[in-house]
Length: 252
Image 1 (cartoon, rainbow, N blue to C red):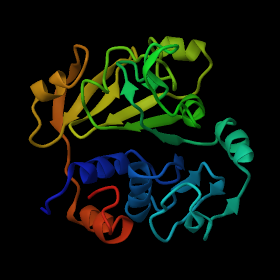
Image 2 (image 1 turned 120 degrees about the horizontal axis):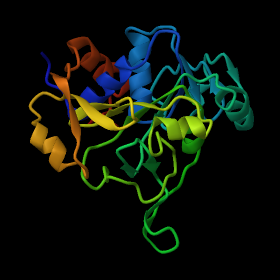
Image 3 (image 1 turned 60 degrees about the vertical axis):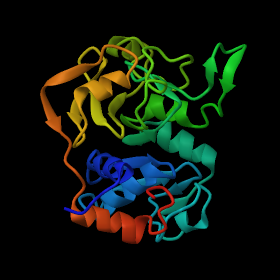
Image 4 (image 1 turned 120 degrees about the vertical axis):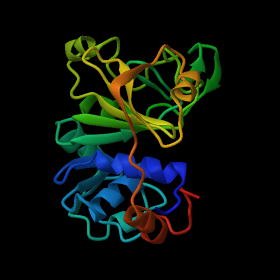
């Protein structure tokens, strides 16, 4: 087995969340690597949509931003951003969205707005962008983030992008589609139970339960059949290093 980095493991696990034929709203960085890895392995018919308005993109190299011209080459169509959000995302045509954030809590709510009180924050963050729309309208949301107690409080300081709010019924009552499906960190893969609370499905190789609990701000539940996360295959590592991110911009 080839040596791999934490980021390469996260990319590999995120790629497995995608199914052939899915339509996914893609961001740059690790989500972009995961989607392109899936398309080159088990999901050749994956349709990638970028916030800039490129539909069914097939980038020949790593895009450096959602406005990179490489996304337009071989795309099925290019539409104004307002159509991308209105006709595709808000109408429920996007299966999977990828998100990150400064904080994520036990119900999958994400904060990318402020740390501390809204009117007098310790840190003011960039805000939603399209994240709230993605969290509210895709059928499945995948969160990719480093794992630390600072990032995983019991309750976020501000709900920028709704998860299960206070539980699955709360999300349903708000009329929101889908919900968070998985949270992939550099320590574990986590999912959500029937009540909409996060639990650990698998630990990455060499990671102990205590380390994950210590990096989480609430009493974290672990699956009764807790697994060890499958590491990336030699082929996946080779694709990431040689084709998707040869300069190690996101995985170095």
